[in-house]
Image 1 (spheres, rainbow, N blue to C red):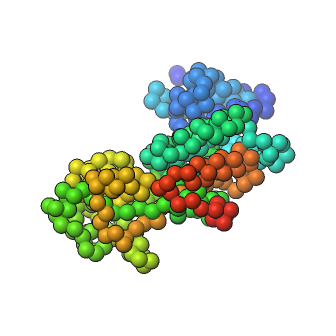
Image 2: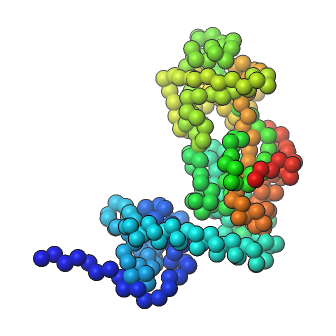
Image 3: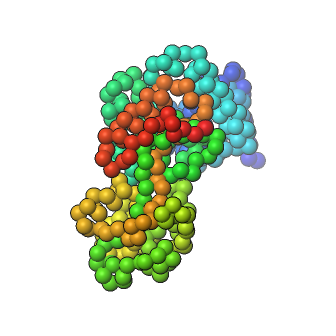
Amino acid sequence: MAVSPKAPKATASPELDDLRVFCIVAHKASFSAAAKAISASPAYVSKRVSVLEERLGTRLLHRSTRRVAMTEAGERVYASAARILEDVERLVEDVSVTRRIPRGTLRVSSSFGFGRNFVAPALAGLSERYPQLSVQLELFDHLVDVAGEGFDLDVRIGDEIAGHLIARCLARNYRVLCAAPAYLERHGTPKTVADLAKHACLAIKERDHPFGIWRLDVRGEAASVKVAGPLSTNNGEVAVQWALAGRGIVLRSLWDAGPLLESGRLQRVLPDVTQSANIWAVYPARLAQSAKVRVCVNHLEEAFSRIGIFVPTNGSENERG
């Protein structure tokens, strides 16, 4: 007769570091992915979770060769551990010198194209300026849950920001419609926003932007159009490549399309039509007094103000939350 494995026996209160490791494993659903996130070995991660299970006296994870999943007890522990870790971090921020001196690890997220081309170079300078600060940058093609995924700061494009977050505008930016001269010669140039529905438009599924719906500003008036075409992607750089090849019309930020417009490889379509795409630093309210977040936001604002394609802004007058 098969014998069910015995649950670990509780022996002591759990360590905070073990709770933190478990939460990362649960979120990533993988020991190896969690190990990579904290720059440790999978064996170390597995050991810390095993120690936590032993101290709590219960199995927290179902393990398999492909992935891990939380048990019912694991789900309860995960919810409690997330609150505990957030409370501890808030306590440290409230009473320690980290409110004045930037130190420790700063986890930053952003989108692929903008993060690689602008956020990454700026953060390199931040690390040099504050040697006690360890910066981790992660890039995604989806909108990040800043607090829920353990990030300190998200650098994002677009003005739709949840009300429970604090946001500071780092620079003014907008998107424009453009296409290759070859495409416009073959298919003609749209005269109105409604005409876009008759053209091959290169839709981009990017972070929080609605897929296939272009919400536009026409000389101060809001307009929207449902677009379609034979090609779509979740990567803006791919869409620009297709536009350059004459495959359709693309809606893209000036930071990306600007040089191509200046060179003539792309042409503006409907020049009076734009889409607001301001650049924001977004962070949880609990980090409002954090020195590491403060210096990072100030540094990014300074760095972007030196880039000619962005319109500088006074961040103190452009805050939400």
